[in-house]
Length: 295
Image: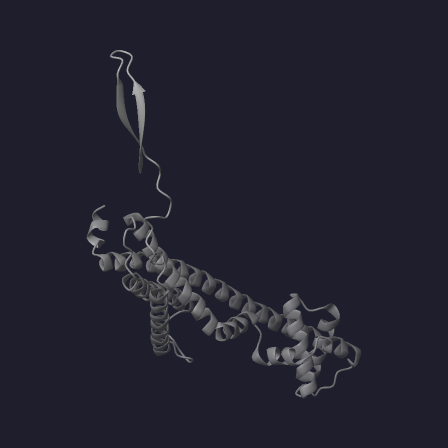
């Protein structure tokens, strides 16, 4: 703020009158801005670590509950009920761990002096969201390898032997099998070569969606020679087994899809819970939580 004095002459009295005129200049932006950083990274890291640790504890507890309910021989829980229960438990884990981590991120952050209440509310929300994001990224890095293994195994939908054979075989092994395929298969279907070849054929057919006519004719001959069935009966068995393998692959795909949806829902709910809890923690830190609630 600065003042200027001007001299004016009065027409009515002929004398001079001194008039003080005050000119207000806008203050430079950022003069009253506090020097404290807007993000307390130590509080964010502390909240994220606690959130991740609680997530691991609750996952271990849930795995123990699941193993106590589900038996490999018999179980009173249906597959649908088990999937829904697992999805709900994932959401509960996200709510509990994210809320505690976000609360700590808001409660442990530095106090901002001279910052408007709305800006403080936004920063507390951002602290909770950052704590959730940090915990999510850190958990993804730590669990990347196990999660990739589980998802790839679930979506493959083929037997362990077929998957192992297909993984060990090179990309040209199927063409080599076609070149060396005998016109009349032997009845020794238990040989490693015959089983390995059929595993590669079935694996490639499941990826393509259907057996090729030449591959199907050869598989029918091998099954007929090994089992003693006629060619029509062998063809019927091949059809049944192929349909069962497709159904297993489709079920695995649906299970992976449902798991992905449940994980997405749990992550979104976790982000909301962490942000909301951080505002409560920050309000209690500054002693303004009750005032915020009554606004």
